[in-house]
Length: 145
Picture 1 (cartoon, rainbow, N blue to C red):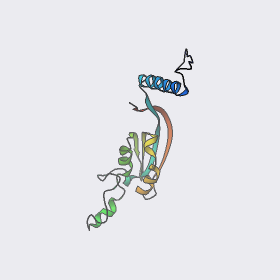
Picture 2: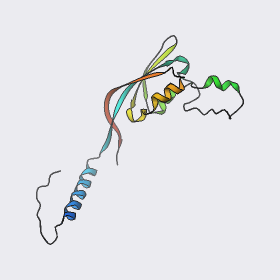
Picture 3: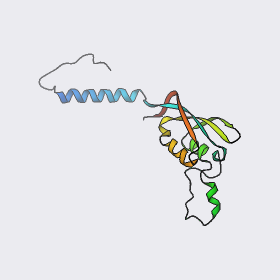
């Protein structure tokens, strides 16, 4: 934004008038540009034991000790935590590999959606899951208006 001309008159010019003119001009120009919010997209690699890859119980877990007296739920804790949580955080799983005892999932996900994921992964996999992130690209996350 460039100011091409301006004049000061003692009758109607004041600091407030110039501020309001600048604010109005900026607001009008800003809305014409169709602004978007940009954010980093990360490539995330998760390695965890194969029993935590996927299941019918989504993360975060709906099980609580008071839901029933069935002892079967103990083995369910943590299942589905890795792929389910990546999907819940709007991640796109682009590759997966299953080895003998562990699996690896590679996903692309917005950095903003991944805060706290490492702690949740550790808790859901009984401390056995690991993850790493690497910057990939910056894309528009959403439109502002």
